[in-house]
Length: 94
Length: 194
Image (tube, rainbow over the protein chains, first blue to last red):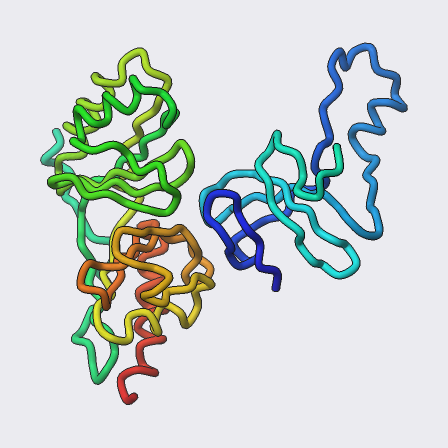
């Protein structure tokens, strides 16, 4: 079980959360001008890294807010949580 | 028209019974008013309107609650609160809030028919809830004045410690009330003999 830190509620059990995919994927503007390839890239293509991954979680059984988590996909170590719109704690620009 | 509707507890079909041995006492507090209040905590017009009607500012600190006269305000999210009013006053309070919040970006929704409240009281109250609840209920971590939303036996709940220090109030969906009460009665058997 993971212990996930909600930016509002603090550390809570994983069973209170639901996973919401990779973070920092921005919906393109002017979608009508996109090629099929660009649109498919936005919809389907994900990084799936080995190592540090920034992902969205929803505190479904708690405050029902989405937030971002930085987690190592190898060790499952969570290095921190941050609100949507903020930069990850590792300092790496996204 | 309104008196045609008779309020009925969701637990009418279950024998509540007396608490046996060291099992905590479980009772339902019926028919309270529940209002879901939403607004921006940084908006002074919103805060002023809430203070005018409820007599207190909604708690900004996450997972805390405030009491103000007959009303209790629980933090549910950074822009969301649960207001509990005495039985039958929810309509009046909702109307007053809507009037005070006229033109302010906010919402007030009456949830009274959807929720109910159980009080679990006794020295094993925390142990009984901890049978299937991931929250740390230790009195050093979870004190009166705090509240939290989490799961109880997989069903969602809002929980707050009682002022007496050895009980909890548990706000649950009405449709889950019979399931949760039967689950609690089953879990309580472990404490009847202990």
